Length: 378
Ligand SMILES: Cc1cc2nc3c(=O)[nH]c(=O)nc-3n(C[C@H](O)[C@H](O)[C@H](O)COP(=O)(O)OP(=O)(O)OC[C@H]3O[C@@H](n4cnc5c(N)ncnc54)[C@H](O)[C@@H]3O)c2cc1C
Image 1 (cartoon, helix red, strand yellow):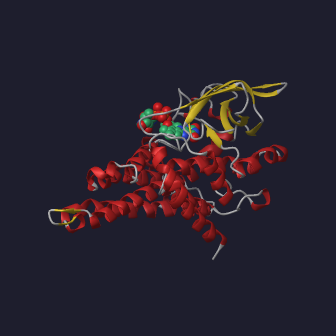
Image 2: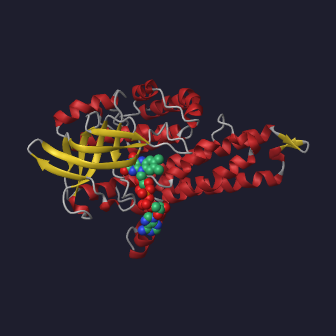
Image 3: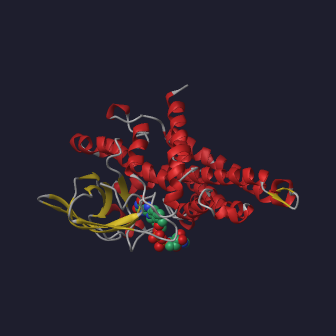
């Protein structure tokens, strides 16, 4: 058995054991026990693609995607929380000076500190170039002022990569990426709660009041481009996570339908009851194929803009369309927290916003296909 297979086996056991047990209470708004994040880190989930020489597992992107999917099959929010910490750890290895990397990375790898990547603001989401958080170079280093909102791990992260404008508002080339210690008193944090529970994702935000950054990781000029490139990976793993959620919903509905009887026979003996399952399986197969293509392109180091956008659109929309149908196939029982449906339904809506809202991605697909870019990979 390969190292990746052993790791994925551990992840699946962890997801189906302690994560599944806790997920029911998270769906009702309870905060996760920080020990569970440390347990996840002990398996390697906060350092999947972090190079082995820096204490990570050194696995490839495909393994990261499979691990995210195994966790999201149970709880999308917890999977998002972990992968966001893992991404900041990798960013430290790629862009931070050794001293900064060595000061923070071990704490991310052990699960002691979680981390986030903060682009979105109250006034700027899809139009990321419009961010108004400002970075100013001073004698003490870069000082950051502004507010970040709707951030995974925003309510508990100890460390953030914060994107801020160093030049004129609206100039994408003026945006830089800064490492910020969120433990400073000048950081005022707030949770974001909603009818869709945000607990396991740690959704929140923070106000940065003249905060001194730990360092500049992505200098203006390259930061915006780097985000546009790296977001393809995020779109691909979110697609895989949506496929995993829909897969669980189909499986739970099918298992229920084999035992629940109505009009003298099990539900799954009624042809009309089976229709929505067949429709869901078909769209899921299509989303899986598009996701596999995007993941393969990223693993091969190719430009995956088109494939990643198409995979995310297909997977998010399949999950948004069919998870409610699977819940309906369960009858009222589908509303209970011991089943995945309400949790996954909410998560599928969230996935429609994170790492590129669906309208924006459709526009990107239209532009790329119209201009002939990526035509060889269609
Ligand atoms: C739970 C959660 C976690 C998140 N985590 C993070 C995180 O960790 N880090 C981070 O930086 N951000 C995060 N986000 C923010 C996410 O990236 C934004 O929600 C997303 O970019 C959309 O921005 P917005 O919500 O401000 O919507 P807006 O940009 O205001 O858009 C509103 C609606 O209009 C549509 N729209 C916007 N512009 C156009 C257009 N030109 N043409 C057609 N339609 C358009 C959008 O698709 C959307 O449906 C998170 C969001 C959620 C919900």
